[in-house]
Length: 205
Ligand code: GDP
Image 1 (cartoon, helix red, strand yellow):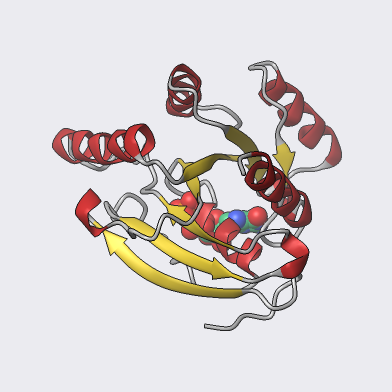
Image 2 (tube, rainbow, N blue to C red; image 1 turned 120 degrees about the horizontal axis):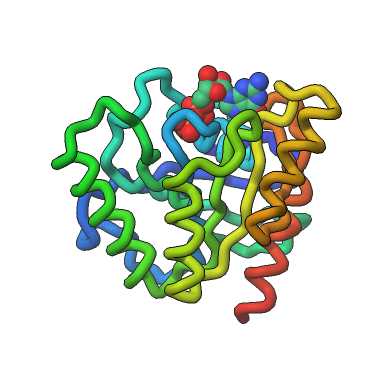
């Protein structure tokens, strides 16, 4: 699906919704993973980065998806990337899922993060109004323990006034992470996230 994006000739395609590792793509292209609590704004951010509104599914029934969705991005001269996958992992922290479902999600996620060779960077998406929640911190520590590169993104910044925005960013920094402030609604931070992705991509070559 060709999409008009900030980045010129970016082509984004939905490839697969995988329920188990044998369904993951096998071409070895670099992968950028998107992680976050249900409703944090992950799908909206993916769509904003791709410049295409409906590609990643935004939903008001959080916690339903227990699959890993792969989107292949091609070209995009100004992003500095040739091709890569955006990997949308199921949102966590939705209180209405059963314990069994929550365990199954955790297993799928950990399996992907532990074993996936093409994974280059994980974006941990926080709702700026909430900042770190316990499961976000657990994930952050887990990524560090397993030496996975990650970036923290504070999204929905448009919902905060200036002083709340400063406060939330300062609280996020207290956990030794420099957040990228963004908004899927206004497009704030989209360029910076792309630059950070491209930088990781180049440094891992
Ligand atoms: P996901 O469950 O993490 O994929 O979250 P979604 O992307 O579906 O977003 C959850 C809700 O927050 C939806 O109603 C979105 O429209 C809204 N939302 C997401 N990002 C933003 C943002 O940057 N600004 C505003 N104002 N709303 C947002």
